Length: 414
Image 1 (tube, rainbow, N blue to C red):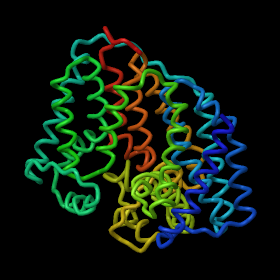
Image 2: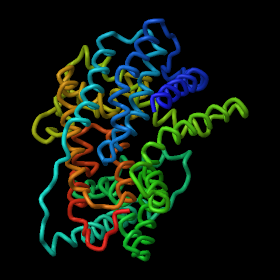
Image 3: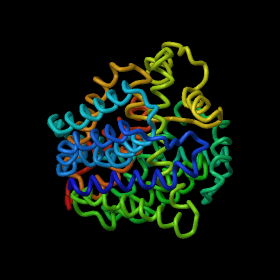
Image 4: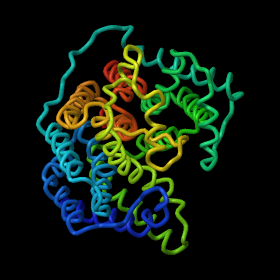
């Protein structure tokens, strides 16, 4: 596994050096390595590799999620560190500590087992919630888009700009956001229970949902939910993620070398790997000399006014590339530093892992097919959103409740 990790690191470095730093140099993807930046980059990977390997080898939902985050966040972050000698040493230390605490907490925190429940109402809550989520999506789509189905991937920013102008009520807004991440999970459960008519309806609603805001993650999770249902039989599949991502990286490299195009890169390593990795330093650089937010634009926004009058995602997008319409949302290290500064590095990893261990307990006894889509959904939510936003707005808290109350009777685990 160590050889696979080293190979993966080399591959990320090569893809960044030969594609990203060239094509996207105008977005501050720099390529000015120094001897020290390259050495420290590898020091981060090798020093944490024992914990990384243990995470890969643990068969649990929490370890599966963290394994994906290692591949799409931690290692690409070390790639950027290697290729930019201007990064402050304090940032390197804080990033190193953040991932050390994150990985160590996952290894040594026990799974949190939740007590069994006995309630007929709770056993049907997933059905009620499915109806509410589907009705919400259909209503919002009907009111604001005329029940629009949209399948294009290149004009999504126009639809997103349009969606920001929708005056959706507080409650509808939350349920609409929940549907992005919860409906794919419910879809797999209905497929598993052979309720194919309901599953087809849910697929239609998910496609309708993409037509509202054109968030690519909606389509991506739909694909993964169907893929997981058809092919996943064990959480050991997470060990194959490193080879799947390696294949993706090589596909990007070969496309660029052979055809001079970046279609695959644009929708994969550029957006999923390197933009979030770059934003970590953007957040650090911005908040290291400015007032921290202290959750005033997230958990405390209804109680305390933030000193930043505009959404911080847009502020950071303007700070990074000079585009006030670019929304630079980010999670993990960025979130911890934005809200609590260096103190957040010592607190946030443990809080995130605690929630993941609760997810372990809530999902006990469920099929690996369901856990696969949960793993994918939670990974990308944590990657791109502040943690409190992920908990409440993106629906992690609701997902925990759904997983806990899903009926296990006659549910074969494999």
